[in-house]
Length: 560
Image (cartoon, rainbow, N blue to C red; front, side, top):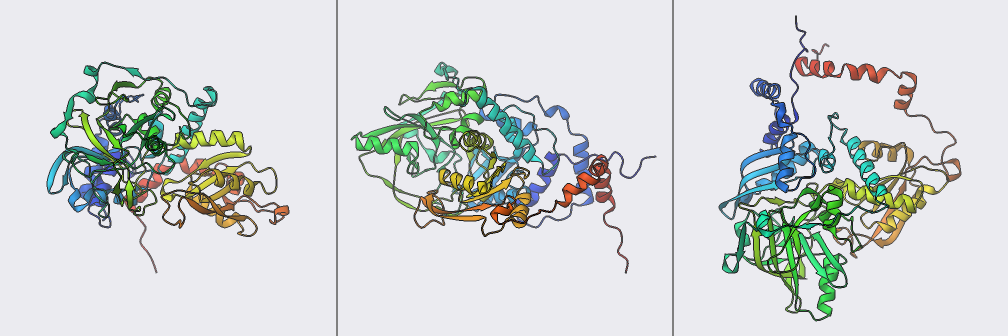
């Protein structure tokens, strides 16, 4: 005879995402699932065709391959239509973060989106590198079936994997130069628009926030070049100002900004630009990261090195930029350098606040658009969702800081708490926490609140970090204020951008010579592991039984 908890099919991730997202999109408090819905979800889970989970594909040569991979792993929500005139896509993005968190929400693919009263064919894609698992999938690693809440373990594995890659390459990101293919074999050359046929407003580029200045191309890789500064591509927001006019917004100090500024000083009339939309996942990750910051490296070669396979490229129609041949779209044009700039913004930025309007900003006149048939468009909800896989950037920074500051064990910047930097160290001397924290704060502009913890702390576990700040840290003497340091130009709290004040919190165990207690008591959990070493094994072995009993029977009746 079957026991009540036997052979109840578990709810798979795809079913849970679909059910919860439907409630999230309605912007209401999720109700309890009805018996019928519960039964339908369990039946769907039980009958799920396991063959949908394909063999891990690496590398993904196109963005479409990547989206299919997300679908195979239950990380894609498909919706037929969303009304962006009512900011339905925006509200859904927020609700998904509310329900699943920044590292647990799925990607969204919407076939059509309503813009300015018309249904525009997409698809439009959101949050395509948001989930924890995408960090592993980017490198062809199986994300595994870790329990909910343990994505940080996988994230650490990716960091270790990336550091090994860099170490084996002699301390650099490996490079494989791109290869040129014939234009007739390049999908991005399927449709070529010039002259009056150019109209950016016909594509599924949206206005993300009601207070934004308008619709934006905000996931393009902007390709620029300069004879002295080399080539570069990076992601900058680009405001659509008309059918063939597009703002280009590199921030001061970024490489495209330096190139445009130097070319303007030299009296050059135009800067030739190609903006690539719908890149393969590795090209996209590099576009939004700081892996090449300050270097003249060929980013496409680095993408090839990390892919273990060269990126196939083709020449742009109106300039010499070699661009990924399998992209969804390329917007080509000229940035006037002697005609005067145009206003730009405001735009909802990375801190979750509305960015400042700029009175003068670079812009470009679009001269050509090439694209696949029915191009897929990605929108980044900046400051709402994760934009790209961050483990490679954090791993490369960690690799370099370990060389510079012996004692550093780990580094992490939570994307949902922009401005925080968490550093773990192997403490060997008094004052080491403040010393390392001070140096990190001076180098990394993003780190405004630097928390230094001991190596036994999981820096990816927000709860554990906050617990340790509360239990190991004394504001005096284990804190230090830096009155002025390099910060971020988009920080809404700074009165003197990009400068910022900073604080270092030394949440390591303070030694007696640092003003700490003579004896630190042990953590209760550590004592449980020490004194009852089999207790967690006992619970883990019966975990399904506990959860199923709770799900079926609920709480027992209350008695007076």
